[in-house]
Length: 220
Image (cartoon, rainbow, N blue to C red; front, side):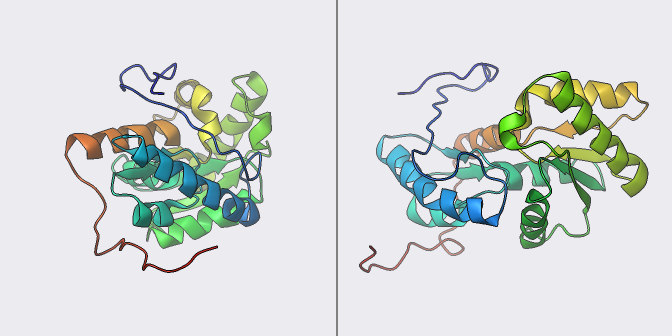
């Protein structure tokens, strides 16, 4: 069941498990709500199967707080991990995401994390999650919005607002530097994977005062 994912060879025993119910992509509040219940089920199954930690591969962090309540192993998620990492790389964060519908969801996440003063802009590349690839259309759209965030909003760190952008993160960082701006680009999926690995290595997990076990009751 545990296998290494291509491109993440420094991490050991990474297994990818997809949800079998819910939206085909997560791009708005409605999608976020539909994705959460099956994510909770998969997370509980992972703990039963003996995994050491869990990563939720979506920038919106669907079901993150609920998963932490019901499992006792470390849980990381892409939005939270990448935004906290970005805070250590600069002072003003620009998030570049997929479509306009995603912007309010990300702004809500930023407020919940208390990072309003650090995230100076959230911009959409006008590409749906299912349209993303490693081609020039995707790179060009992300580059356009990243440079706008840097020039217009004075962002000094770029965070990619979708885990479907993993394949182009380093290329985008190179393109931004070629344009004259030495600005780091944070890939949210890799940030979450390494965050989870660190938690496991340090034998840390979420607080049971902050994430209490759900009270026993009938739930149907």
